[in-house]
Image 1 (cartoon, rainbow, N blue to C red):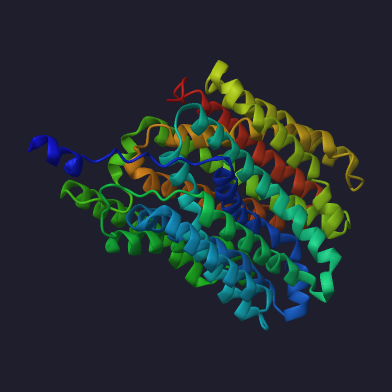
Image 2 (image 1 turned 180 degrees about the vertical axis):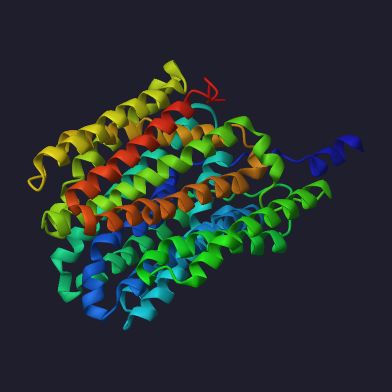
Amino acid sequence: MTEILAPRTARSPVAPPVLGGLGLFTVLLGAALPLIDFFIVNVALPTIGHDLAAGDAVLELVVAGYGVAYAVLLVLGGRLGDMFGRRRLFLGGMVAFGLTSLACGLAPTAWTLVAARVAQGAASAAMLPQVLATIQSATEGPRRARAMGLYGATAGLSMVAGQILGGVLVAADIAGTGWRAVFLVNVPVVLLGLFLAARTVPETRSQHPQPVDVPGTLLLAVALVSLLAPLTEGRAAGWPLWTWLSLGLFPVAATAFYLVERRAERGGRTPLVPPGLFANLPLRRGLVMILPFSIGFSGFMFVIAVALQQGVGLSPVRAGLTLAPMAVSFFVVSLLGPRLVSRWGTRVVTAGGLLQAVGVGVLALTVWGSWPHVGGLELWPGVIVAGAGQALQLPVLFRVILSEVPAARAGVGSGVMITAQQSALALGVATLGTLFLTLVPGHGMRDALVVTLLVQLAGVALTTALSLRLPRVIA
């Protein structure tokens, strides 16, 4: 009897999900779209303002609305992927991203565009956390290291390419679409991504999903909005009273969020951002580094776009192409990262910081000595070296942060990391951008740019020093 029943009751082991080469390409495509769209709009803002009769404050909302919605909902997007399946959330987020991109491209008024950008940011928050969570759950060993290196390369390249692509599309004025092409170009890319994802991306999810932490979600949203909204809108709006009240609310909301999350974790529940996650040394120290790095990265991209167009008088295309060598050097050097890390460990990050410092210093000296004749070739040595230095930092930091996060918490871990990065990107535009634009009237474009580059150089020095505290070997 036992022999007869055995074939009926025995279960073949379920093969673990595997992310193949084409599947990795697909999720990296999904990772590139939200990052490109954060930067692609920078060089299109003057044209948008003219076409839709929008003032500076509304144009700031076109940028800030996307960034704030994106940052606020990222951790929730990671949690939902853990619960309902990361492939499902990836597909749903990509569909929503395509539809909201179409809405942005067809927006008849400035406020319609702002609303569509907020919705586009929410769609990005549903899609992007699933990329890293899928990589963490469906790869291992050298394949995971290679995939994380490619993710870092994609992230850095997307941030530079977004600005370049924005200038090219606006100048091309395809079929008379003008600035609308920077959003409409997403639609065919999304269709391709959906076709590939449905066939190549495996489904993964947490084996022990937890319900959504509603109080934590609301408090995190209040904390991030109270910080990012006034910093991104304050200068254009003239720093009214609400901006200062909002900034005063931030530490209160952040403290309340931490206390609620700690109580939930001690009560045996799984909060939106488990405080215990930060006991993970690589995650904690990597996040501390990602903040100044991303602030400097996004601040530089915004400031250099304004300086080259308004100070030097370059067209959007020429301003974007000035950064093309940075994109090339970043991509090429980032591909060498896994091999270098296997030999030298996280000291590669330290070397990258030193290299980036040299690049930023060369840029500051070039601007000081050659302004306003800095239209391309003059800046290339600095941007090439800086791009190479950044490539030795960002991909490796992503690997460090997630190296010891359990697969069951992959969605939460990736959501926390991307939220920190996205918030820092928004802060970079707000802080370094505000510093630059505040200095211009009294000191001129050249001196304002040099001071901003020196502030960024101080941030690079900080990240380089912090890199010495990273675990030498990545798990």
